[in-house]
Image (cartoon, rainbow, N blue to C red; front, side, top):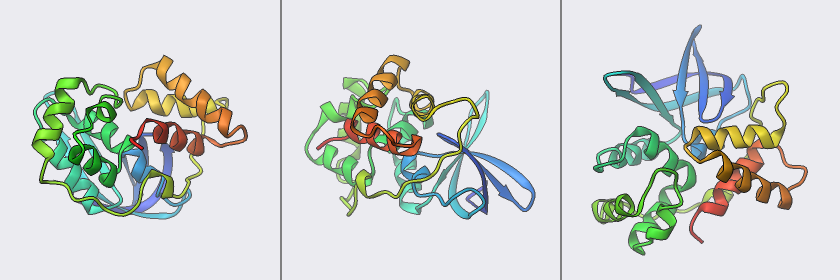
Length: 203
């Protein structure tokens, strides 16, 4: 079991990143709350990891904070919530926001996450109640990361691709990015992703 990786950040294509550990490149999936906290390319990174093994694949998930990995593990134990959905939940909601949703029985905020229906949202609230503690900070406090882009893809296109990879429908991703771009016309892709996700988070 791979529990932790320390190396240099080689590439970022949300929600995937490539970590160079002594010449070995590890492909790691990470929530946007982690990706926004990464250093610039070439910087040193330590990630707490979780290896998800299924009949058809092995996927490595990485988190800046141990508390985020613990939250991920709590989420995937909920019936109907797999690693991909847990990644989407943690991309749109940090630990504090998710705790508020559970405490307030805020089904409406949870169903905004791609793949989460009303029944799953209700199940999340029931099974997470008493397991989460609100913490300081929210999505707006996360520093920006200069995400490396494909050569011919503009910032909006890159932001849309990241949201689609997280499970949002292409049409919804386009609308979310368009709204973010309207408020931030000169924003880079990381800023657009952050504002698009923030618009989906509970107030």
